[in-house]
Length: 168
Image: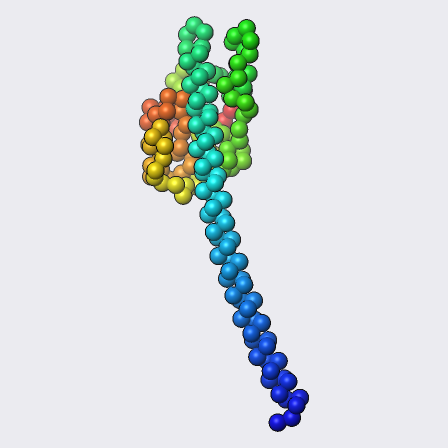
């Protein structure tokens, strides 16, 4: 066997070894990407629960602190600047976007046409299906993020029908 032929054969093994390594690295990268995507969705869902709870608390505070007849706000901006008092009250620091979609929340209307809650616009299925905080235990097994309605009184089952939901 001549020296040139041996080099070509060894080069073939090196090439195959390099292809095998590239394939392994691709599989590892795909697995890491999948894990990162799931972790990212779980984080967005945790944030959705936190932000939704902030809206529900602010809506309840607005309602409970109403001078005269108790009422919900007619627009979400009223939670940031409640001008019904001599000094402006702030039930929320700012209006939060939906962490799942990045868009504004849909509002859920009370029977009087005012805003009683918010919900996500996402039709995606949530990863979280159980072990919700007690206040939101009705979210168990819901098929879409949009089904998670953050209502001021904390009871999504008492919320108006989905037909009463609209955007701000």
